[in-house]
Image 1 (cartoon, one colour):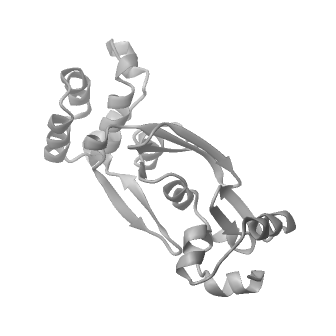
Image 2 (image 1 turned 90 degrees about the vertical axis):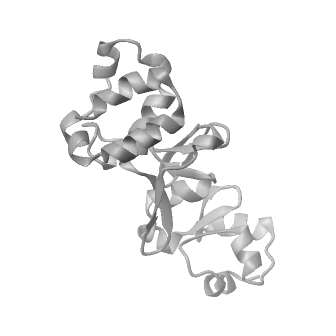
Length: 199
């Protein structure tokens, strides 16, 4: 397979080896490695690449969704997106039903934290110009964060140290949905602190 054949076969800026096979082409590792060395491709992780010429079109959120599946952006990334925490977040933080992982590549630092598969819900599908990604709903983003950090929250000061924007949460959170999600997680300790996020 020639590089120009790859460009013709794959229309998205990011692709996997499986995408090449689905397009009806065979590819060898040495070809992909050569194109990476020549600067035609950027390797995101084993089996996933981006066209260098199209990197400007790629969103980090799309990369986060593709690197480690199933996963959805949540925790600090979603809290920052919704304005629930004041800090800028310099990593893409997701939850996954698989084991914890981290990746680094041209598009950033990607962190994946494990959550029980029974709790892998409460996200929305965001479509972009060149792809898609999954993002926690506001209610689930707050609960995911509290649930996965519950061991460090034992006092009111611990909770205050998270620096959640309580006014913004009260304006944005759907109370009924939040309570349904909270009950589904089934933790009395989580309930104690999570209820502080509601008016």
